[in-house]
Image (tube, rainbow over all chains, first blue to last red):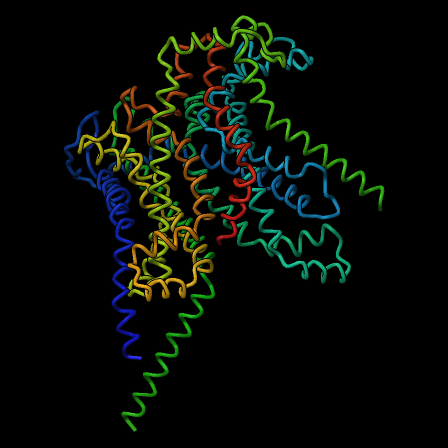
Length: 327
Length: 278
């Protein structure tokens, strides 16, 4: 017993040793930039090529300026709007398709091929997709105008991209189009993980297809739905590539997201690194809060339970020892 | 009953076909238009019949600042480098978490779970300033080295390794006199091959498609990665050269589409696997 304990101890250092590269890279490329971003948020750092920093007399001046900025308000509400209005149809479509694809009664031909095609837009570079859709809505003779006129929906070419709500809806469409396939595959694997016995029991109880979906499928993929929600929300809060390259945040800031706002603050015009850093930290806090939610939901439950029992055992043992001593 | 099911089945099939067309159509228009002249596109922007201006469009495209070969090579260097580092060191870190009993193990694992959702984009200002200060802005290594610390991949590898790698194998290798590092490289890595392959695909694709970081760090045209090259197509120099814009987009999308279709079985399985990790 004694010898074995010594043995595990001598191997323990490899645990530290093998995690060291990760830790060093994390400290240099993640932790330091995070702290540095936080610091810059309290300084006057701006101007291209400037690296000398001075703390402001009012440390929260940048935060106040950002929170009072109407452009930031626009960017923030756009970001939420674009995310919510793409997430809802995306999830609805993915759930519908996932329910069909896992239902043996509706085995449709070419299911595998459909899955491959639905997921394809997700793998293509977002920069390519953004510029492709920009070309599609070109005025006067982009493909969309061409089709609309040929099929008689329009009499003459229409300049879609100068209209604020049309521009927003196209971004929403692109995001939905790029992501519903991904969400669908995740939901399919979640539904396939549900034990068939639960469905059989529901069938014995006389549940119809809709009831089975609502009362068996949905509750059993709760964790996966939460995972999808949180990862999509974090991705949505950082939305950059599509709005940046599709219309550069325009027209009239209609597709300006927080990601584009941060980029524009820091890398164009006045090079306001301090304002961009303050904006980043505001988003950072929101994202940490959101991911903390997921962290608690996805925690390794068995392990947490085991550790709790272990602690209780140790406590009980100590109590016993104490009692023995006192007695 | 039978009839209503047939109706439902037909509706499902029609919707699926519609969505499949929606997935394909933009790329078909793109590829066909890359073979048509700007005049043809201006007359009718949608056609399913390829024309003969492929070479001409290519000439106009390459005659300006667009150099897809340079972007391709740089993207390849960054993506391959980042993928190799991310998969190797994530597996190594997961190995440390699974095989050894050390005091801070649980703390370290909780820490990894805590940070894995935080996107790098959000601390980019500090990252840029740091890189700028040490004069490394136009070095591709700054896009590769951060991959050593990929928390979500460590998490995935750990979840996969726990049931896949039996500690008895490690123990018996020790009895045979193998060193710890050797056991990792020669025994653990081969067992982890399926997980590594899955994660490698996603690491490669996300690195290949990344726009934000390179856009901030790279100012030298010779160092541009493909997504930055693509963003040039949005600029004024190609404003009226529709044929060559479609050409540029085709050159960047078609290799991805081909690779995707070849590997689609593994990619779809990988996406599904990634979700079960919770």
